[in-house]
Image 1: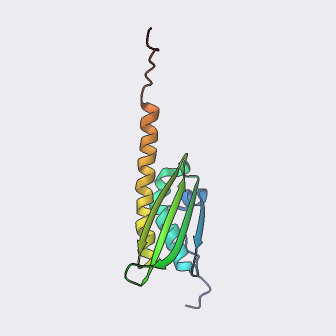
Image 2: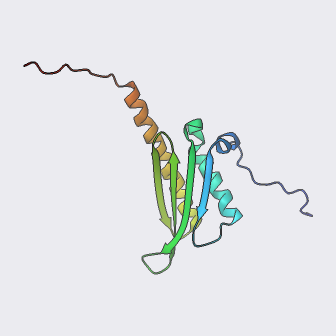
Image 3: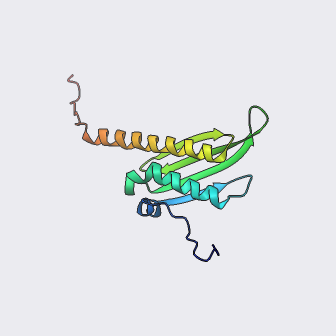
Length: 133
């Protein structure tokens, strides 16, 4: 292969959902590689595309810190903007593993938040009169 027919990576099946979300990826303490950026976008597509336009924005923060055993751990924090903010955090030795765990947690947290929102909309309001004197 001469490399002239290379296609940029795009998540299959998630193009519309991921493109509509405003995704900000920030990394502290090291350089963001194209492989890591592509992995983050792909995992966000898996975790959040089913929620459609209800997800307004996503902020992903990846940082490195000293672990308990003296090595470097990678921490991935994800803030998902809905009506209220939903947060998920994961720490692992491997950056890809921490992204996997954080995106899975973000997907579960968004599902729970939207379910709670649906339940409060469907719950009938009970109006009580003031106590008689």
